Length: 110
Image (tube, rainbow, N blue to C red; front, side, top):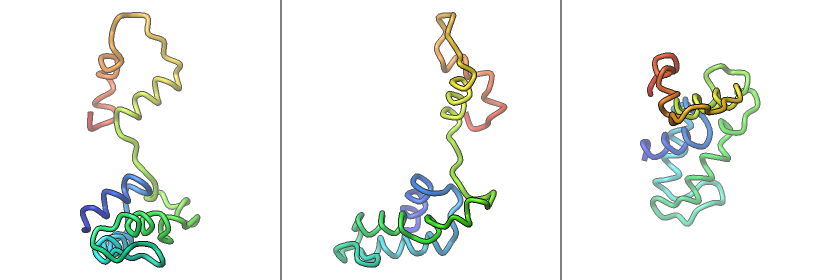
């Protein structure tokens, strides 16, 4: 359950969840209940997603100032956003991924 909790939190809320946040979501997954949400059966996604989105760690505006809070953009999305911001226009027959190749060492994980 913690594996599932971490992945859901990272996808929907933040890349660096607190241990308490992960524990709350994992408990909701195991018990199938979060506040008034869920059927009480193991793995109930209504309870799990409710815990992910309605937990105070997800809703706190104080965390917006924290530099460790937020989502990390995937490398390919980061490259495409950069190309869009520079208003890149393809004038050759190269594919976008070939153009992204020189950036792989600069942005990491590509």
